[in-house]
Image (cartoon, rainbow, N blue to C red; front, side, top):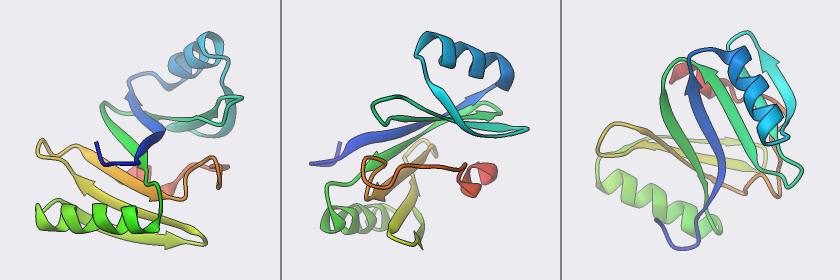
Length: 127
């Protein structure tokens, strides 16, 4: 794990979206913030985010400790051949890559504690 990085949100690929939404809202008392026919964004009272996407597999979103840490993650991913894209949307920067098993890895700055997600990120539909 990169120094200073912490898990900001989780993307879970599920087989039955309605069943998973019902489960996580009930068990973890999460609130549905946004919903589409194939995805849902859930939040906890503490600010954690869970994105459910109807498919299969897994992805994680890590939060960099600062802009320099995010740039370091981008350089390392590039050096390892795993960097796929860096995008900016307002104050949010997203570095996307793949791990050695070709699993999606995203590192963002700032995190949801500063800029909470309020809508489903369009990017999840490409995974």
